[in-house]
Length: 354
Image (cartoon, rainbow, N blue to C red; front, side):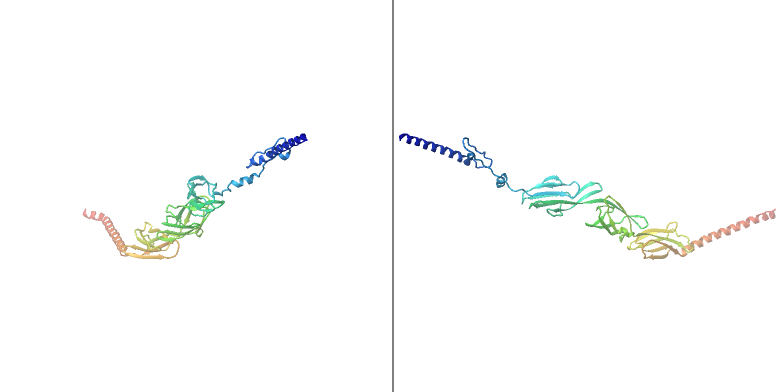
């Protein structure tokens, strides 16, 4: 009986020890595996149910502590190679940034970029993420977007002007109206214009009066994609005044005072052919011819060139000059006749003396 009790006691002790050991193995991995990537613990000497491991989705673990992605802002241009200064640093466009939402940034570009001596690109505004006509822009990031620097291609074109008769003239003022508004053409005739655009010739001033193109097709110009020289005839016409006497002989040195459509006056002396030629705006004129106190007037208000013959009568100075000339010539004839008669009578006078 005592032996049986001892055996039962030993078995009870073994059971308690065994139970305690198995319980420690089962609970130990749970205490260690408190984070992602803890190594699984495997027991030896037990069944598969004693093997313990911890597995969790990687995305779920990362999402808990990682911030969401920053907005993407792309800065581009429609022009050629363009440099931009972004937050004080220079970049060649296009360039892309990832900025935190709510952050403020600045960007600036040049107003003009020159591809050649007669070609350039002119900045005219930002579009897209923010809009502004200024080359310097400040903005706050609110989300993904694109910011574009817009440029126009411009050409250094040349304008030459001439009268309707092909005589070169230099207007004091020339104004064109283009897609960006009025453009003044300098006296030298060279000006920057947008390529492939329409321009209207709205104002040309020459000799203090407004003139226009002599050919209607020059009222509107369409610029090309290459530098061009435009030669435009204007409503400036040559008026020619010829001064003669009643016999059709030219008067040299006659004074001709011409008043143009603008009210300005100019005076000239007739040349050896009795002619004075001037370029006049619109061609309309009023002329006064003065010669030895005799004045003759002529005028024409029609548009275009004029060839005018002005006839002066024989005036007192002319008659006096002719009288003097005739008197001198008559005296010459009388003296010549007397001398001839004297020569004819000399033989007879000599014979009588002998």
